[in-house]
Length: 177
Image (cartoon, rainbow, N blue to C red):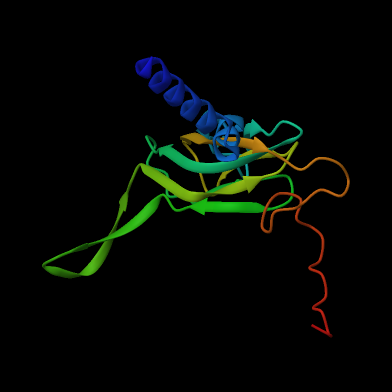
């Protein structure tokens, strides 16, 4: 009888953990990724390379970008820009200076870049994640990963500062408070 009561207590504890608000929120997050090869490839006669859409955020969701992986096989100098339809969200420099311990002068090295954002860079519902390589010729391969979280719904939605569609001016400061 005591063994059954102990099992029931453990089952009740597991059900309580699964029903907790924090656990339910974690299950609503969905890991996602987007990939594009040869971002920034262009014809030498063209003035600039075109932008490439890596991912489009579904309606009702917000995409929190957490990782960018750039495979720089063509030794492009960069920078690589990630933007939504409104403005640039972040840039990644593909050419980085390196110092030698015995030499005070720096030289530049080309690197494959993996950049991580601990809090995530938000892209709003319906927005594309667009990659552009400045000054590119041969292109780079770009992978973005992150998570989809429930996004704002309706016209009175909450907006993320610095997030997609953040085109409203900030509210005036309260004079009396």
